[in-house]
Length: 458
Image (cartoon, rainbow, N blue to C red; front, side, top):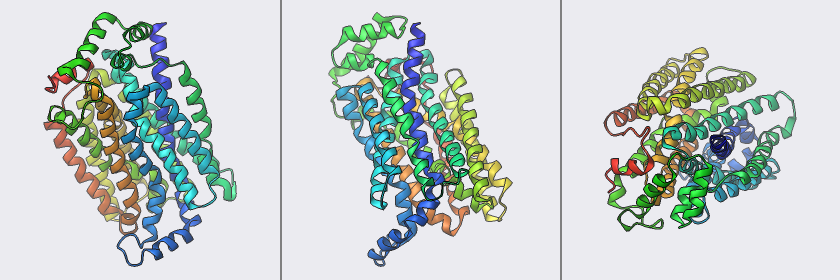
């Protein structure tokens, strides 16, 4: 019964990931329509910039539309650690559910470019916050032996949300809804957002957050309810972790003592986006059309990509606590290099169609099995309790900053040639492989309070 409550709590918390994934991918089915709809606005903005490099390009402003949510994610990721520490992980997740709902309704009823961009920005705040608070919450309610699988539920829901977005876009696209088609694509997200808010009411507060707040008896009751095997020992380890070197939960973050986990979080998050994963997620339909597919078939290919992502994420989740984080990253890095190199070659030699689709399926499988399954688990593990929210925020901020940069610049580079940009992504993955081999530690099965000692935080 207690294990059932733990699993239920982790699943509900991970639903923020479903909204995260849906919100991230849904624009792929509408971005070309938005480009046509706001063409006059783009021309006006470009003209107002005169001859300023990049800013005078309509493609830059379309990239801005696509990246508007991502700008929100950067801010959401950076700011969410404060309410997470002040009010608790669960209450912050409830606030994020409200932001998801407002964004979905606002995007669907947007009356001009500015209102659409603002609504998408609000959704981005929720996505950025979810990438910080969701992994922290699940990591802090989970026992060490199953923490990897439970935190990885968030990644499962992210990719499930991506698949739902692609599938939803494809279905809506076949309903022939005309001028309101794109509004339905964004508006349907309001339903799971409302469900997420209501389901969170039954979740417990994080016991580690309760301990940090001095509410030891509530923490004890919560840990017993979650089925902790040795409550007294875990509480003592958490207490020692919080009191380590007389630290407090509000202590400065950028200090030499935390240099190792800071560098690890920054690098895994940066490499995650330098693979070009969100160029594929945001512009999948456009990329497949560049390779010669029709508009409807391009949407269907996006669904195939989403399904592949889901299958390999499920596989990774089942073995992450036995196989380890580092081995998954090694396999994923090799898959990245092979698939991205092949895509670049296909565009250089003007060979499209099946080669590009097959390569992207290998690419998305490599991402799902490696970086996608590992990133949020790894970042949630490597920081001690007193700065875990700040560390997760740093990793998420880096992730979303790089994501915004990739999404914003991809249309400009793709207009010239797709080959150069995919060759660049492949080169970045060679660097990731070197990083994994030389710097990345293994954290599977290690209690959170012992990982900090493993990283030299004494």
